[in-house]
Image (cartoon, rainbow, N blue to C red; front, side, top):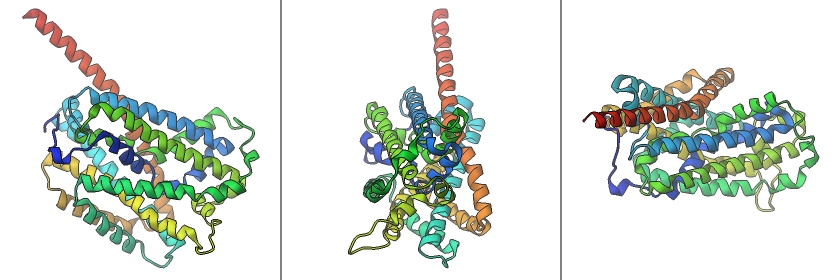
Amino acid sequence: MKINVYPPKNMMLHAYLLFFIIINTQVGVGIFTFQRVVYEASMRDAWISVIVAGLVTHLIMWLIVRTLQKYKSADLFGIHYDLYGKWIGMVFNLLYIVYYFLVTFAVMRNYSSVVQAWIFPDIPTWVLILLISCLAFYAAMGGIRVIVGICLFSFIVTLLTVLLFHSSIQHAIWTQLLPVLDSSSWDIMNGAVRMGFSLAGFEIISVIYPFILNKNRVMLHSQLAVLFSNVLYLFIMVISIGYFAPDQLLRSLWPSLNMLKIVEYPYLERLEFIVISAWMLVILSGILLNTWLITRGCKRMWKLNPKPVLIAVFFIILLMSFVFHKRLEVKDFMIRLEVSSIFFSFIYPALLCCIVFIVFAWRKKKQRKGGEHT
C-alpha cells in the first residue's frame, strides 16, 4: 500500500467543499433526538454541554489536520501503514471500516424507526432499509463528485428545516434556562460526552484529504464546518429547553419533530411529515459518505472493486435489520456504538496526532545523526 495518494485531476475537490461534506457527517437523524439524551445528563445546563463538546470538536479537528499536514498527500489508511507496518496497520484500518459499517446501519435503522413512528407504522423495517439501500447504491456508483453534489443539496434542506423553528421560538419560556451552572461539573461533562455521538463523523477528513486540491485551505473550511454544526446544535438545544417543560423534554423521544408539529400554514398542515421525507436527502448523504469510506478502505488495502463491496455492505445491513428489530435491542446497540464513536472520533485522533509527531521527531533525529556520521 502506498502511503501518499495522488488521485486523478478529474476526481479532485476544492477545499471549500469540505464545509458541506463535514456538516453532512455531523448532522443526521440524531438531530431529532439529541436534546433528550444530553438533557438527561446536565438538565437545564445542557446547552453548556453542547458548547463544551463543540470546543473539544474544534480541538480534535485541529489535531487531525495537523496530523495530515505532516504528510504530502496521505489518508488515514496510509498513515496507519506508515506508523504500524503492514499487518498492525491493516488491523487498525479494518477497525475503522467495521466502525463506519456499524454507523451506516445505525443511521438507516434510526431513520426507519422515525418513518415507522410518524408516517408508516405498519411498514416492515426491512422494506425501508431495502429501499434506502437501493437508492444509496445507485447514488454511490456515481463516485465521490456525485456524493459531494448530494451533500450540497442536503445542506440546503438542513437550512430550510432550521428556519421552521420560528414558531417554537415564539412559544419558548427563556427563564427555563436559569439558573446557569445549576448542574455539577461532572453532569455537564457527562452531557458533553453524550453530545459527542451527534458531533462525530468529522474525522472523515482523514480519508478525503488526498482528494483536496488546495490543501492549504483545509484547516479553514473544516473548522468553519464544525462551527456551523456546533451553532446549529446549540440553537436547537436552547430552543428545546425554553419550549419544553423539564419533564416533557425527558419524555419526548423526538423533541425536534414535536416542535415542528405546531408549525401550520393555511395551505399546509402536518409539516413534520414533509420534514421527515425531505430529511431522507440528509440521511442519504451521510450514508454515501460512510459507504464511500468503506469502499475506499477496501480498495486501498485489498484492491477490491467498489461495486461488489457496496453490494455486500447493503446486503449485510439488510440481514442485520432482521436481527435488530426490537426496540431494546436497538437501544443497547446504540449505547455501545455511542461509546465507540467517542473513541474513534475523539480519543484516537488525538493519540494518533501525538504518535505522528513523536515518530517524525524520532525520524528527523535519526536522519540527522546518520548525516553526521557520513
